[in-house]
Length: 131
Image 1 (cartoon, rainbow, N blue to C red):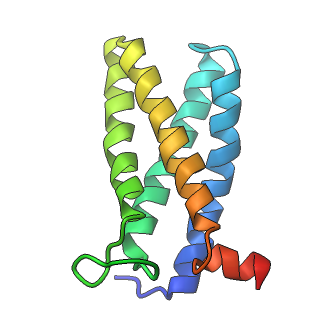
Image 2 (cartoon, rainbow, N blue to C red; image 1 turned 90 degrees about the vertical axis):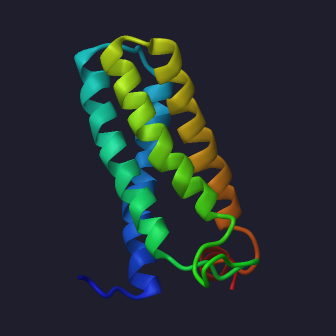
């Protein structure tokens, strides 16, 4: 098993979450149901799955911890890991309402809200950007 440092995990997380942020925004704004939408959607889902798994490996450094590892921010990792299969299987069944709801929830919760929280004082991104 890989034994990565917190900093290495943070870089891996950024390598998956940054492209997912832009692909997700692009997907939300463009025409749905096309082959390009489906292909980009698969890439987005792989990036978000990797993001969710990576963040589960990162210990919480801010706020209370559960099991000496997980913090409240990990709730968004769980949102990620529930929303992805929900959206995927909904699309496969043709339930576009559920697919849309799961993907919007994933983008807003998993990228916008969790991303905003990542810049709060005490977190690594805040330290990197603001000292």
